[in-house]
Image (cartoon, rainbow, N blue to C red; front, side, top):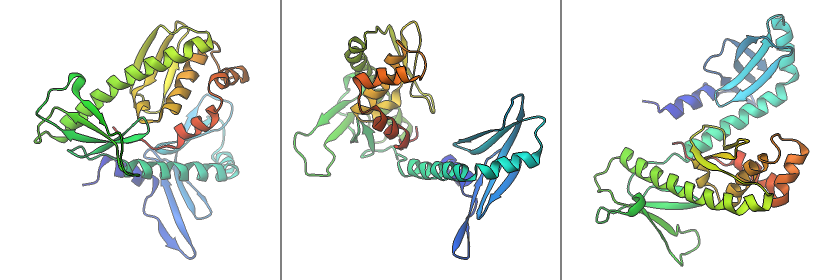
Length: 278
């Protein structure tokens, strides 16, 4: 039986076949109602009609969506698709590669499983002898061989614990760590930016890493805890900068740069790095 992730990958690759020196590629949106061909690339896409002035193209986790005004003819939509073909194929290919990377990072929750924490791998150790405060205890080896994981998370579960129990215990520990570390980083950058934050909430959004409101409320995705501290610092500085500039104008990015000069590289890493699916 195929996993939900494999079914999602099937939407991106519906039986690629060889055709001469170049393989035919298929990309299929699950709600596809039209299709187009760009050379050896076949794209089945979702066409939506809406009250808007121009044709819009969006490539998301499921594939290509085209939104067009009611009065635009199909022929004009197809012409626009051909004009945007290079961009569309590039984005679809990147999406497929990302889904494959995510599939490769899927965690099998058991004793000895590994997961990323602050940019490093941590090994899960089921340790029923102890009931740890906070649900788990992180052990960090002072010295290890190159390439050897130096951190282990001991959680108070029996060796007979099932995958869901282990996953829930690790997630609970990670969320507590996220709240603690995010608070520390907010307190670190807020004075540098001359702002005050009032409240921190954790989110589990699929694609949004953080939000900020005028009242000083900050929401940060708990899964940021998987990344190294520099990436976390970029997102924290990004949201705190919104307390000064509530848009993404040049003035906003200058504000971010004032405390995180390498923000562009960190922003790219945030987009490119594949995290384990929860």
